[in-house]
Image (cartoon, rainbow, N blue to C red; front, side, top):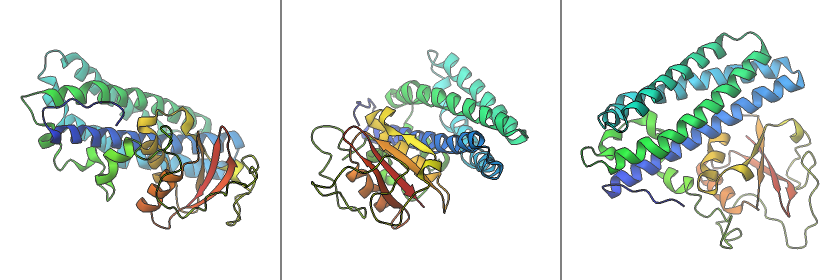
Length: 293
């Protein structure tokens, strides 16, 4: 990672990185699901709006809320014993109540506009909440000599992701091989997406077709994740979370500050043969790629 994780043991350090990575992936998923709902509302597409609304509600109930409860059961009691963190933990539990209330209101919303507004509010609150957990709660527990964070989180699948890719989370969150700096952009592993030749002319702007792999002429209707605004250290995990929220037959457009060849290799390793990728724009400042599941 680009930041140093201070901990009493290597196991606790890895536990912090795993939780931060999972938080980041969850944030990416939530961002995409909300963007799908907002875009459907803006387009006046009632069918797409209903589908996006239901997917968002389902995810909050199967992933977001269980994760919050697992935190309260596993992490918060230990942090609450520290007098310097007690008020913060109380506030975090209060925020969980607000998040739960937003989910209930989202589920009950009958207006697409209201559902989109509630979804955006939930996204903003979760982002702030996640940052406080990553920057304050987790370091406090990792540096405590009274508790082993790795032991506390052992078996807590709701906190660590609980799926087949969990062992890759720490390195993915760190953006290993991202290529954003140090000249690493072109040095990643091979990918199923054909890389452009040096003399390949610039591709058309998003919405056009460039790679000859079947075309995404409807790319303008896909939700967009602008990874250029995401900090380098969590960029890959955010993208993985967003892709995890893409339903079969659906897709998304990724905006990146560089040609993400190492990222594409990681995606192909995590989801072999699942996504087709179409370059919509190839620099020099922005690379736009359409992913279809």
